Length: 352
Image (cartoon, rainbow, N blue to C red; front, side, top):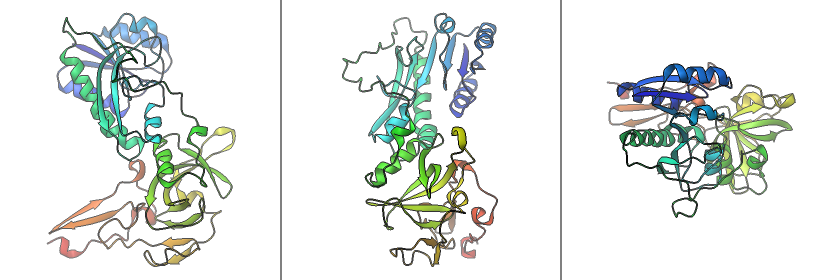
């Protein structure tokens, strides 16, 4: 069976589909859809696929393709959900369950017949984490379900019908920055966390700190610190802690907004605010947490466990085994002393 993957980029999900199919013995090829319709059509004609799968598509598929080939598109949404910001809305709205649909390409985006659908419980996490775990696995499960009955003569895909009780989705617009905006005087911590998580990876949440327009990334809920809502009340591990109306939230990374809507480089928060932020008062680990001055909290990396939500390196000990954790934002570790965490030392007793 010849399967062609049409994708806007050779994304993680596209790579997963490719390796799954290739390992299973299918003849697989990839064609990137980046706007050159003539090149795309030529690629399809040369490969002559039995099935076209679109794991990651940001452009509309030409009518000449989906009318002559079976074309199935991965949509990260439950039955009835339509729109380009599906996962963003689901995370920001705090829905308890979400899903993935494998549906036919059609003239109207996300309106085609559904060949397979899988659901999963939502976690409070970033869009990237959710996509590369639950969404990817659900999409792969849909893929193998479809392939199991692709040639079955009696199979009929599910025509989208909102009168059915399992069609709980709806059409939502592309999420704009106005939809993501944070009101630090009214939004609670969990709401702010969902907004930043929903914009993780891209585009970030546009906000202003010390008069500087920046996009917010890499947020973590703080359990103890408090202060005046919206103010920066602490720093640690290059992250900043901003007070909310009912607590506080750590923000690990910022991306400056430049002129003409351009964006700067995403960097650890204190790097971006270095020339604007009042000098933080040094304190010992987790001491004087409730004073009004901005604090600089030093993390003791010799102690096991994650002392702060923004902490990127820590270890845990179980008998004679030590487990080292380093979930760096976007998977990248910096080269500076503060980011490589040269102060991390594991006790010699952990290593016989």
